[in-house]
Image (cartoon, rainbow, N blue to C red; front, side, top):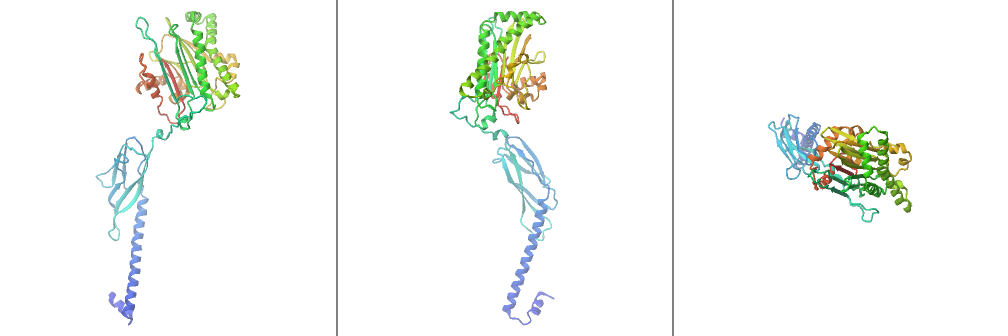
Length: 460
Protein backbone atom coordinates (compact mmCIF):
# COMPACT_ATOMS: atom_id res chain seq x y z
CA UNK A 1 0.00 0.00 0.00
CA UNK A 2 1.41 3.35 -0.99
CA UNK A 3 1.10 6.44 1.10
CA UNK A 4 -1.65 7.91 -1.10
CA UNK A 5 -3.95 4.90 -0.44
CA UNK A 6 -3.14 5.03 3.26
CA UNK A 7 -4.18 8.65 3.34
CA UNK A 8 -7.40 7.90 1.44
CA UNK A 9 -8.35 5.22 3.96
CA UNK A 10 -7.51 7.47 6.89
CA UNK A 11 -9.42 10.40 5.43
CA UNK A 12 -12.67 8.40 5.18
CA UNK A 13 -14.39 11.20 3.38
CA UNK A 14 -12.87 14.02 5.45
CA UNK A 15 -12.60 17.39 3.80
CA UNK A 16 -9.46 18.33 1.88
CA UNK A 17 -8.74 21.11 4.34
CA UNK A 18 -8.87 18.74 7.30
CA UNK A 19 -6.69 16.24 5.55
CA UNK A 20 -4.19 18.91 4.59
CA UNK A 21 -3.87 19.88 8.22
CA UNK A 22 -3.43 16.26 9.23
CA UNK A 23 -0.68 15.70 6.66
CA UNK A 24 1.13 18.86 7.70
CA UNK A 25 0.91 17.93 11.37
CA UNK A 26 2.18 14.44 10.81
CA UNK A 27 4.98 15.53 8.49
CA UNK A 28 6.20 18.12 11.01
CA UNK A 29 6.10 15.57 13.79
CA UNK A 30 8.09 13.04 11.81
CA UNK A 31 10.58 15.67 10.67
CA UNK A 32 11.13 16.81 14.26
CA UNK A 33 11.62 13.23 15.40
CA UNK A 34 14.01 12.60 12.55
CA UNK A 35 16.06 15.71 13.37
CA UNK A 36 16.13 14.67 17.03
CA UNK A 37 17.35 11.27 15.96
CA UNK A 38 20.13 12.87 13.93
CA UNK A 39 21.08 15.24 16.77
CA UNK A 40 21.21 12.35 19.21
CA UNK A 41 23.46 10.51 16.79
CA UNK A 42 25.78 13.54 16.62
CA UNK A 43 25.79 13.94 20.40
CA UNK A 44 26.72 10.28 20.80
CA UNK A 45 29.58 10.73 18.33
CA UNK A 46 30.78 13.98 19.94
CA UNK A 47 30.75 12.37 23.38
CA UNK A 48 32.66 9.42 21.99
CA UNK A 49 35.28 11.75 20.52
CA UNK A 50 35.46 13.74 23.78
CA UNK A 51 36.42 10.56 25.59
CA UNK A 52 39.39 9.96 23.32
CA UNK A 53 42.73 10.50 25.16
CA UNK A 54 43.86 13.49 23.11
CA UNK A 55 46.22 15.63 25.19
CA UNK A 56 48.45 18.52 24.17
CA UNK A 57 51.48 18.60 26.53
CA UNK A 58 52.12 21.84 28.42
CA UNK A 59 54.68 24.27 27.07
CA UNK A 60 56.81 26.93 28.80
CA UNK A 61 57.36 30.44 27.59
CA UNK A 62 60.69 31.07 25.84
CA UNK A 63 61.60 27.36 25.90
CA UNK A 64 61.73 25.34 22.65
CA UNK A 65 58.67 23.12 22.28
CA UNK A 66 58.01 20.07 20.11
CA UNK A 67 55.04 17.73 20.55
CA UNK A 68 53.10 15.21 18.44
CA UNK A 69 49.33 15.11 18.98
CA UNK A 70 47.75 11.89 17.67
CA UNK A 71 44.03 11.28 16.99
CA UNK A 72 43.29 7.62 17.87
CA UNK A 73 40.04 7.08 15.94
CA UNK A 74 39.70 5.46 12.50
CA UNK A 75 36.14 6.77 11.94
CA UNK A 76 37.33 10.38 12.03
CA UNK A 77 38.27 11.82 8.62
CA UNK A 78 39.29 15.17 7.11
CA UNK A 79 40.86 16.12 10.46
CA UNK A 80 42.27 19.60 11.08
CA UNK A 81 43.83 21.25 14.13
CA UNK A 82 43.91 25.03 14.41
CA UNK A 83 44.21 27.92 16.85
CA UNK A 84 47.94 28.48 17.21
CA UNK A 85 50.10 30.83 15.15
CA UNK A 86 53.74 31.77 15.11
CA UNK A 87 52.78 35.44 15.33
CA UNK A 88 50.66 35.16 18.49
CA UNK A 89 51.83 32.17 20.51
CA UNK A 90 55.10 31.44 18.72
CA UNK A 91 53.87 27.95 17.76
CA UNK A 92 52.91 26.35 14.45
CA UNK A 93 50.77 23.27 13.72
CA UNK A 94 51.80 20.87 10.97
CA UNK A 95 49.64 17.96 9.79
CA UNK A 96 51.61 14.75 9.44
CA UNK A 97 51.54 12.34 6.49
CA UNK A 98 49.24 9.83 8.22
CA UNK A 99 46.51 12.49 8.36
CA UNK A 100 45.77 11.65 11.98
CA UNK A 101 48.64 13.27 13.85
CA UNK A 102 49.89 16.83 14.16
CA UNK A 103 53.25 18.32 15.10
CA UNK A 104 53.17 21.44 17.27
CA UNK A 105 56.51 23.20 17.47
CA UNK A 106 58.21 26.52 18.11
CA UNK A 107 59.30 28.69 21.01
CA UNK A 108 56.30 30.04 22.92
CA UNK A 109 56.35 33.81 23.38
CA UNK A 110 53.14 34.30 25.31
CA UNK A 111 51.96 32.48 28.41
CA UNK A 112 48.38 31.48 29.15
CA UNK A 113 45.75 28.88 28.22
CA UNK A 114 44.87 28.76 24.53
CA UNK A 115 42.02 26.96 22.73
CA UNK A 116 42.91 24.57 19.94
CA UNK A 117 40.07 23.47 17.65
CA UNK A 118 39.91 19.88 16.44
CA UNK A 119 37.59 19.68 13.35
CA UNK A 120 36.61 16.40 11.72
CA UNK A 121 34.03 14.40 9.81
CA UNK A 122 32.77 11.05 11.07
CA UNK A 123 32.09 7.93 9.05
CA UNK A 124 28.69 6.29 9.55
CA UNK A 125 26.49 9.33 10.08
CA UNK A 126 23.03 8.80 8.53
CA UNK A 127 23.44 11.87 6.33
CA UNK A 128 26.29 14.03 5.19
CA UNK A 129 26.98 16.54 7.94
CA UNK A 130 29.28 19.58 8.26
CA UNK A 131 32.46 19.28 10.31
CA UNK A 132 32.11 18.41 13.97
CA UNK A 133 34.41 20.00 16.56
CA UNK A 134 36.12 19.25 19.82
CA UNK A 135 37.88 21.99 21.78
CA UNK A 136 41.32 21.19 23.14
CA UNK A 137 43.65 23.39 25.18
CA UNK A 138 47.35 24.02 25.43
CA UNK A 139 48.81 25.61 28.54
CA UNK A 140 51.90 27.74 28.08
CA UNK A 141 53.42 28.17 31.51
CA UNK A 142 54.96 31.53 32.40
CA UNK A 143 58.59 31.89 33.41
CA UNK A 144 58.52 31.93 37.23
CA UNK A 145 60.84 34.94 37.10
CA UNK A 146 58.14 36.95 35.34
CA UNK A 147 55.79 36.44 38.29
CA UNK A 148 58.02 38.29 40.74
CA UNK A 149 57.30 41.95 41.32
CA UNK A 150 59.96 44.62 41.85
CA UNK A 151 58.21 46.99 44.23
CA UNK A 152 60.18 50.09 45.29
CA UNK A 153 61.05 50.56 48.94
CA UNK A 154 59.07 53.44 50.53
CA UNK A 155 61.12 56.63 50.36
CA UNK A 156 60.42 57.61 53.96
CA UNK A 157 61.67 54.35 55.44
CA UNK A 158 64.00 54.55 58.45
CA UNK A 159 67.55 53.44 57.65
CA UNK A 160 67.26 53.62 53.84
CA UNK A 161 69.55 51.35 51.83
CA UNK A 162 70.13 50.97 48.11
CA UNK A 163 68.71 47.84 46.49
CA UNK A 164 72.16 46.97 45.17
CA UNK A 165 75.78 47.66 46.09
CA UNK A 166 79.08 46.85 44.41
CA UNK A 167 82.74 47.66 44.93
CA UNK A 168 86.11 46.83 43.44
CA UNK A 169 89.34 47.36 45.35
CA UNK A 170 92.20 47.42 42.86
CA UNK A 171 95.59 46.83 44.43
CA UNK A 172 98.53 48.08 42.40
CA UNK A 173 101.24 45.70 41.27
CA UNK A 174 104.50 45.56 43.20
CA UNK A 175 107.46 47.63 42.05
CA UNK A 176 108.81 44.63 40.15
CA UNK A 177 105.52 44.31 38.24
CA UNK A 178 104.18 41.36 40.22
CA UNK A 179 100.37 41.66 40.34
CA UNK A 180 98.64 41.68 43.72
CA UNK A 181 95.28 40.27 44.62
CA UNK A 182 92.21 42.51 44.24
CA UNK A 183 88.84 42.42 46.01
CA UNK A 184 85.43 42.51 44.38
CA UNK A 185 82.05 42.43 46.09
CA UNK A 186 78.41 42.82 45.18
CA UNK A 187 75.10 42.74 47.03
CA UNK A 188 71.56 42.57 45.65
CA UNK A 189 68.09 42.79 47.16
CA UNK A 190 66.40 39.40 47.02
CA UNK A 191 63.28 38.74 44.97
CA UNK A 192 61.34 37.90 48.13
CA UNK A 193 62.15 41.38 49.46
CA UNK A 194 61.41 43.09 46.15
CA UNK A 195 58.07 41.28 45.95
CA UNK A 196 56.93 43.07 49.13
CA UNK A 197 58.73 46.36 48.67
CA UNK A 198 61.13 45.60 51.51
CA UNK A 199 64.74 46.86 51.61
CA UNK A 200 67.93 44.87 51.24
CA UNK A 201 69.09 43.58 54.63
CA UNK A 202 72.56 42.36 53.56
CA UNK A 203 75.70 44.51 53.66
CA UNK A 204 79.46 44.34 53.11
CA UNK A 205 82.61 46.39 53.61
CA UNK A 206 86.05 46.08 51.95
CA UNK A 207 89.41 47.59 52.85
CA UNK A 208 93.03 47.34 51.77
CA UNK A 209 95.87 49.10 53.57
CA UNK A 210 98.37 50.27 50.98
CA UNK A 211 101.05 50.75 53.64
CA UNK A 212 100.83 47.42 55.48
CA UNK A 213 99.19 45.42 52.66
CA UNK A 214 96.49 44.01 54.95
CA UNK A 215 93.15 43.11 53.40
CA UNK A 216 89.93 43.30 55.45
CA UNK A 217 86.59 41.94 54.28
CA UNK A 218 83.22 41.78 56.05
CA UNK A 219 79.80 40.60 54.90
CA UNK A 220 76.63 40.49 56.98
CA UNK A 221 73.10 39.21 56.57
CA UNK A 222 70.39 41.06 58.46
CA UNK A 223 67.68 38.76 59.79
CA UNK A 224 64.51 38.94 57.72
CA UNK A 225 62.41 38.71 60.88
CA UNK A 226 64.12 41.72 62.50
CA UNK A 227 62.63 45.08 61.42
CA UNK A 228 65.92 47.03 61.54
CA UNK A 229 68.35 44.29 60.54
CA UNK A 230 69.41 46.30 57.48
CA UNK A 231 70.99 48.79 59.87
CA UNK A 232 72.37 46.02 62.06
CA UNK A 233 74.25 44.54 59.11
CA UNK A 234 75.57 47.96 58.06
CA UNK A 235 76.81 48.75 61.58
CA UNK A 236 78.36 45.30 61.94
CA UNK A 237 80.39 45.60 58.73
CA UNK A 238 81.48 49.19 59.25
CA UNK A 239 82.44 48.91 62.91
CA UNK A 240 84.21 45.58 62.48
CA UNK A 241 86.26 46.77 59.50
CA UNK A 242 87.07 50.11 61.14
CA UNK A 243 88.39 48.31 64.21
CA UNK A 244 90.55 45.99 62.09
CA UNK A 245 91.76 48.95 60.07
CA UNK A 246 92.92 50.72 63.24
CA UNK A 247 94.55 47.63 64.70
CA UNK A 248 96.38 46.75 61.49
CA UNK A 249 97.64 50.26 60.74
CA UNK A 250 100.69 49.47 62.89
CA UNK A 251 101.03 45.70 62.65
CA UNK A 252 104.74 45.13 63.26
CA UNK A 253 104.22 43.14 66.45
CA UNK A 254 101.46 41.13 64.83
CA UNK A 255 103.68 40.49 61.82
CA UNK A 256 106.45 39.25 64.13
CA UNK A 257 104.04 36.88 65.89
CA UNK A 258 102.82 35.56 62.55
CA UNK A 259 106.38 34.89 61.38
CA UNK A 260 107.20 33.05 64.61
CA UNK A 261 103.98 31.06 64.36
CA UNK A 262 104.86 30.12 60.78
CA UNK A 263 108.28 28.85 61.86
CA UNK A 264 106.81 26.60 64.55
CA UNK A 265 103.05 26.16 64.51
CA UNK A 266 103.34 23.54 67.25
CA UNK A 267 104.95 26.01 69.65
CA UNK A 268 102.65 26.68 72.60
CA UNK A 269 104.05 30.17 73.11
CA UNK A 270 103.67 31.08 69.43
CA UNK A 271 100.17 29.64 69.43
CA UNK A 272 99.13 31.67 72.47
CA UNK A 273 100.60 34.84 71.02
CA UNK A 274 98.80 34.47 67.71
CA UNK A 275 95.53 33.57 69.45
CA UNK A 276 95.77 36.70 71.57
CA UNK A 277 96.42 38.79 68.47
CA UNK A 278 93.45 37.32 66.60
CA UNK A 279 91.20 37.87 69.61
CA UNK A 280 92.38 41.46 69.88
CA UNK A 281 91.72 42.15 66.22
CA UNK A 282 88.84 40.09 64.80
CA UNK A 283 87.35 39.04 68.14
CA UNK A 284 87.19 42.56 69.47
CA UNK A 285 85.96 43.75 66.08
CA UNK A 286 82.92 41.52 66.52
CA UNK A 287 82.43 42.61 70.13
CA UNK A 288 82.63 46.28 69.17
CA UNK A 289 80.10 45.72 66.40
CA UNK A 290 77.78 44.02 68.89
CA UNK A 291 78.05 46.96 71.30
CA UNK A 292 77.58 49.50 68.52
CA UNK A 293 74.31 47.86 67.50
CA UNK A 294 73.11 47.90 71.12
CA UNK A 295 74.07 51.56 71.35
CA UNK A 296 71.90 52.29 68.30
CA UNK A 297 68.91 50.34 69.60
CA UNK A 298 68.74 51.36 73.26
CA UNK A 299 68.17 55.14 72.93
CA UNK A 300 65.25 54.37 70.63
CA UNK A 301 63.71 52.03 73.20
CA UNK A 302 64.27 49.03 70.98
CA UNK A 303 65.61 45.58 71.67
CA UNK A 304 68.97 44.70 70.18
CA UNK A 305 67.46 41.66 68.48
CA UNK A 306 65.42 44.03 66.31
CA UNK A 307 68.77 44.71 64.57
CA UNK A 308 69.77 41.04 64.33
CA UNK A 309 72.54 40.26 61.84
CA UNK A 310 75.18 37.71 61.04
CA UNK A 311 78.83 38.70 60.58
CA UNK A 312 81.56 37.08 58.52
CA UNK A 313 84.90 38.86 58.87
CA UNK A 314 88.33 38.06 57.43
CA UNK A 315 91.77 39.68 57.47
CA UNK A 316 94.49 38.56 55.09
CA UNK A 317 98.10 39.37 54.22
CA UNK A 318 100.83 37.93 52.04
CA UNK A 319 104.27 37.19 53.51
CA UNK A 320 107.44 35.70 52.05
CA UNK A 321 106.32 32.25 53.21
CA UNK A 322 102.74 32.56 51.93
CA UNK A 323 99.43 33.94 53.12
CA UNK A 324 98.06 34.42 56.62
CA UNK A 325 94.27 34.50 56.96
CA UNK A 326 92.25 35.01 60.13
CA UNK A 327 88.50 35.14 60.47
CA UNK A 328 85.48 35.52 62.74
CA UNK A 329 82.14 33.92 61.90
CA UNK A 330 78.71 34.09 63.49
CA UNK A 331 75.62 32.95 61.61
CA UNK A 332 75.13 31.21 58.30
CA UNK A 333 76.75 31.82 54.92
CA UNK A 334 80.29 30.72 54.11
CA UNK A 335 83.97 31.68 54.31
CA UNK A 336 86.31 29.54 52.21
CA UNK A 337 89.89 29.51 50.94
CA UNK A 338 89.68 27.98 47.49
CA UNK A 339 92.80 26.77 45.68
CA UNK A 340 92.38 25.43 42.18
CA UNK A 341 96.06 24.51 41.80
CA UNK A 342 96.13 21.97 44.61
CA UNK A 343 92.39 21.22 44.46
CA UNK A 344 91.50 22.25 48.01
CA UNK A 345 88.64 24.15 49.58
CA UNK A 346 89.32 25.11 53.18
CA UNK A 347 86.33 26.29 55.20
CA UNK A 348 87.13 28.81 57.95
CA UNK A 349 84.28 27.61 60.14
CA UNK A 350 80.80 26.23 59.50
CA UNK A 351 77.32 27.80 59.51
CA UNK A 352 75.58 28.18 62.85
CA UNK A 353 72.39 26.32 63.57
CA UNK A 354 69.70 28.07 65.58
CA UNK A 355 67.22 26.72 68.09
CA UNK A 356 64.89 25.59 65.32
CA UNK A 357 65.42 24.21 61.82
CA UNK A 358 66.18 26.91 59.30
CA UNK A 359 67.34 29.36 61.95
CA UNK A 360 70.83 30.59 62.74
CA UNK A 361 72.65 32.65 65.36
CA UNK A 362 73.27 36.36 65.27
CA UNK A 363 75.91 38.82 66.36
CA UNK A 364 73.27 40.58 68.46
CA UNK A 365 72.77 37.56 70.77
CA UNK A 366 74.44 38.08 74.19
CA UNK A 367 75.29 34.39 74.48
CA UNK A 368 77.68 34.71 71.53
CA UNK A 369 80.09 36.51 73.85
CA UNK A 370 79.24 35.01 77.26
CA UNK A 371 81.06 31.69 76.74
CA UNK A 372 84.74 32.44 76.05
CA UNK A 373 85.51 28.92 74.81
CA UNK A 374 82.72 28.98 72.25
CA UNK A 375 83.63 32.53 71.29
CA UNK A 376 87.22 31.45 70.54
CA UNK A 377 85.85 28.68 68.34
CA UNK A 378 84.31 31.35 66.11
CA UNK A 379 87.80 32.59 65.25
CA UNK A 380 90.08 30.81 62.86
CA UNK A 381 93.45 31.26 61.18
CA UNK A 382 95.31 29.56 58.37
CA UNK A 383 98.72 29.83 56.76
CA UNK A 384 98.76 28.69 53.13
CA UNK A 385 101.35 29.02 50.35
CA UNK A 386 98.78 30.62 48.06
CA UNK A 387 95.12 30.43 47.05
CA UNK A 388 92.92 31.13 44.05
CA UNK A 389 90.21 32.99 45.93
CA UNK A 390 89.02 33.81 49.41
CA UNK A 391 85.21 33.77 49.40
CA UNK A 392 82.86 35.38 51.90
CA UNK A 393 79.14 35.13 51.20
CA UNK A 394 75.74 35.28 52.83
CA UNK A 395 73.35 32.34 52.72
CA UNK A 396 71.51 33.95 49.80
CA UNK A 397 74.43 32.67 47.72
CA UNK A 398 75.64 29.66 49.71
CA UNK A 399 72.22 28.01 50.07
CA UNK A 400 71.39 27.75 46.35
CA UNK A 401 74.96 27.01 45.30
CA UNK A 402 75.81 24.42 47.96
CA UNK A 403 72.50 23.31 49.53
CA UNK A 404 74.10 21.28 52.35
CA UNK A 405 76.90 21.70 54.90
CA UNK A 406 78.56 18.63 53.42
CA UNK A 407 78.75 20.34 50.03
CA UNK A 408 80.41 23.37 51.63
CA UNK A 409 83.35 21.10 52.41
CA UNK A 410 83.54 19.76 48.84
CA UNK A 411 86.29 21.08 46.60
CA UNK A 412 84.27 20.00 43.57
CA UNK A 413 81.37 22.26 44.59
CA UNK A 414 83.67 25.25 45.04
CA UNK A 415 85.26 24.48 41.72
CA UNK A 416 81.77 24.45 40.17
CA UNK A 417 81.13 27.88 41.68
CA UNK A 418 84.38 29.22 40.23
CA UNK A 419 83.45 27.84 36.81
CA UNK A 420 79.91 29.20 37.18
CA UNK A 421 81.25 32.70 37.74
CA UNK A 422 83.54 32.54 34.72
CA UNK A 423 80.97 30.93 32.42
CA UNK A 424 78.40 33.59 33.30
CA UNK A 425 80.42 36.67 32.55
CA UNK A 426 82.40 37.36 35.72
CA UNK A 427 85.98 37.94 34.60
CA UNK A 428 88.11 37.55 37.70
CA UNK A 429 91.29 38.83 36.10
CA UNK A 430 93.83 41.25 37.53
CA UNK A 431 92.66 44.87 37.85
CA UNK A 432 89.34 44.20 36.07
CA UNK A 433 87.20 46.85 37.74
CA UNK A 434 84.27 45.87 35.51
CA UNK A 435 84.09 42.67 37.57
CA UNK A 436 81.99 44.57 40.14
CA UNK A 437 79.21 45.06 37.58
CA UNK A 438 79.65 41.54 36.29
CA UNK A 439 79.38 40.07 39.77
CA UNK A 440 76.26 42.12 40.51
CA UNK A 441 74.65 40.82 37.32
CA UNK A 442 75.65 37.27 38.24
CA UNK A 443 73.77 37.59 41.54
CA UNK A 444 70.54 37.60 39.54
CA UNK A 445 70.92 33.85 38.89
CA UNK A 446 67.77 31.77 39.11
CA UNK A 447 67.36 29.07 41.75
CA UNK A 448 63.83 27.82 42.58
CA UNK A 449 62.92 28.50 46.19
CA UNK A 450 66.00 30.65 46.85
CA UNK A 451 65.09 34.33 46.68
CA UNK A 452 66.85 35.90 49.67
CA UNK A 453 69.23 38.88 49.55
CA UNK A 454 72.55 37.86 48.01
CA UNK A 455 75.99 39.14 48.91
CA UNK A 456 79.42 37.84 47.92
CA UNK A 457 82.96 39.17 48.34
CA UNK A 458 85.98 37.63 46.62
CA UNK A 459 89.68 38.26 47.21
CA UNK A 460 91.49 36.86 44.19
